[in-house]
Amino acid sequence: MNVSFDLTVVWAAIISLAVALYVVMDGFDLGIGILFGRFKVGGERDTAMNAIAPVWDGNETWLVMGGGGLMAAFPLAYAIILPALYTPLIAMLLGLVFRGVAFEFRWRDPAHRGFWDFAFSAGSVLATLAQGITLGALLQGIHVEGRSYAGGWWDWLTPFSLLCGVALMIGYALLGSCWLIWRSDGPLHDDARKFAKWLTPAMLAAIGAVSLATPFLEGKYYERWFAWPGVLFSAQMPLTVAIVGLLLWRAIAKGKDHSPFLWTLTLFGLCMAGLAISIWPDVIPGRVSIWQAASPAKSQTFMLVGVSILLPLILAYTGWAYWVFRGKVGDEGYHAHDH
Image (cartoon, rainbow, N blue to C red):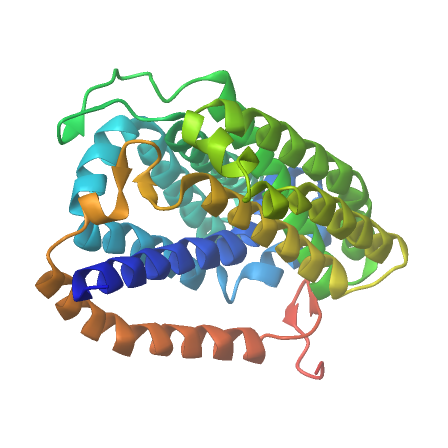
């Protein structure tokens, strides 16, 4: 095993970690945005905003790290993926910008708060739908000839990519409702629990639909899931998802505060594991492997030095922010006496 191989796998792991942390951390605040229109105007919406106010902006650090890392460590993949997915990626960025502006202006411009609330919710829906469509378009395959994208402008828009977009919206909404179960009390807490009860079976159905469709998109997917001996492991995934889904449902029904969010994170982790089974070791599924797309070993080594310093710092300040703003939140902010 040579140095180049090691570095390429390390960088694939770093980018995968950044994407996973983004999905977890920005997922719940996008989910709250998706549900925002269902909350009562006034105290409920203010409390929901305060539940994410201290952390939402920093959560997008991981999106920047994932995109920047892809460009630097796997430039060929970056050069192919961006032209193929310009439309959903630009839509995602516009959605994130729109909701970010709305987040700030709804407090400073109370005369138009209804408009800013709508903008916050619409931006969250657009960003989430675009992320799911991007994933679906990547999974269904990108037409590559030589070292460049050779498909059309609308290749990303298919029933499967739309299914992935809707599935991610359901998943983020569940994550957001479980975050509010954990972090709020009163009427908002009760509404969040009610939403989580019907979002749990919806998420399991969405996972099932995407999982059933994926192996038939690409011959390699089918082989990785159903060929011997890998099938011994992959066959356990649906059962594990069903068990975790049942535990999540019971935690919500029994009035637990912390565990619904943790069980939902476990469901997302299982989905990411399933995604890894399908595409590893490709960076563009079925077309370009991580080694074909990798930048030179010297470049990867240089960047790794910087990441080894920055990554612990980012994790440390993120952990500190979540620790400082722990406990329950009200419409006036986090309660100082909570531990």
